[in-house]
Length: 339
Image 1 (cartoon, one colour):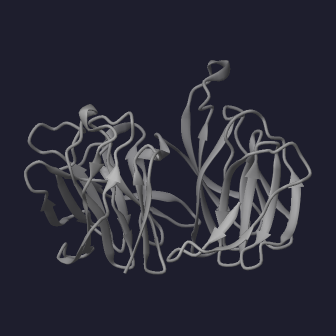
Image 2 (cartoon, one colour; image 1 turned 180 degrees about the vertical axis):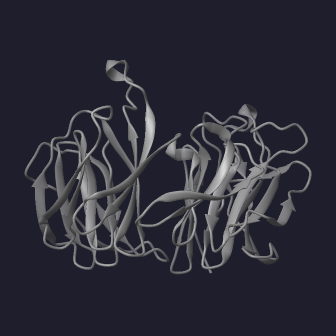
C-alpha cells in the first residue's frame, strides 16, 4: 500500500507486510488519521495516515470471499462469519460484535453510515455467494455505535440500488414492490418512508446536498445510455431540475459533494470503440438548481478492451479539490482532475 499526493503523484510512504507470503489487500478504509486494510489471509491492519507506521493488527477468519472494511466515527467496521465487528480505529480494541440472523450466515458488508444520536446504519448483503441454496437478500441494521445493539432492522433489495442522502435519509426500492422508490427516514426508533419517487429501481445514481439524481434514456427506456439527468428534492420527492445531453452523448455516474454535482459527459460507446482514445468533459453543476458552474475538457482516456454499450466514465470520488474518474468496470485508466 502507498500514500500519494493527489495533485502531484508524489509518494509519501509505502507499507509492505513481511510476515506472510504476499497476501493481497481485499479492501481498505481511510479516515483523516488512519488507514485500515483487510488482507486475504484474514489480517486486519491499521496504519497511521501521515507516517505510514503500523498502529495495530488483529486476525479475523478470512474465508474465501471478498471482505471489506469501513472507517466511520473512530471505528473500523468489518465482517466476520455471521457477524459484523467494530474495532477502535487507533488502538485496535474490539468494541462490539453484531450477530446477524440465522438466515444470514454469510455476511458481506456493503456500507456503514453515521447518523445523529450515536446511530449507525449498517448495510449488508446476505448469502451473496449462492452457497447452500440460501436466499440472497440485503439487510439494513440500525445500530447503537457504542454497544453494537441492534435497534431495528429491515430487509432491502440489492444495496447497489440504494443511495444515501444527507443526515438520516436513504433512497431505496421498496423490498415488497421494487418498482417503487422510497425516501426513507432513519432514527434510533425506526426506519420509515417519507415519500416516493416516480422512478424505476435502476434509475437512481446519486444523492446528497438535498438532491436525488436519476439517469435515464427517455427516448427508448433502455439502460444502455443515460442521456437525461433528473433531480428531485429529498424532503418531498418533488422534481427540481433536469439536464439533457446533446445528441450522441450521455452521462456517466455522477457524484454529489458540497452542494455540487460532478458528472462526465461523453460520446456513446460500442464494442467497436475498444482501445480507442475517448474525449469527454467533466461538468460541475449546482446541486439545487442544475445550473452549470464549470466545464473541464478531460485528457483523452483509452476505452477498455471489452468496451460495450454500458461502458461509461464515472466520477469515483471528490476530495480537496481533486476529482477521480475511471471506467465503470474499474479497468483501464484512472484520471485525477484538479481545480
